[in-house]
Length: 126
Image (cartoon, rainbow, N blue to C red; front, side, top):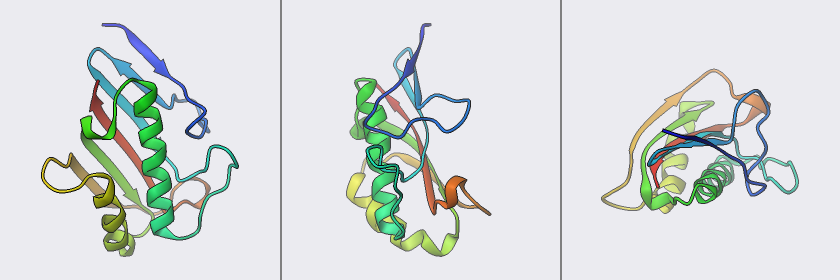
């Protein structure tokens, strides 16, 4: 099985020794996406805006692999404080509405890089 490194300017560049994503066979693995605007390098303050930005970055990496949000089978969502859970869910449901939403883990953690409030990783099919 061939491993393809995914790179797109429509999502922020990796800030460490990792790839934005990897495609292997029929699967796409999207690294955790911070809510950084890839054009400006800026990050919004509000949790809802951060959730939207992170999901847009996940979408961009998926599209670089020839996949899309409707092909996501699993997400892992990291919240810098679990108090953001309800607001995060409100935005997440706009990207993954109704039945057929991917399997998901959402966890509260101590901190995220660059002071972000959310980071989202995904696994999808091509």
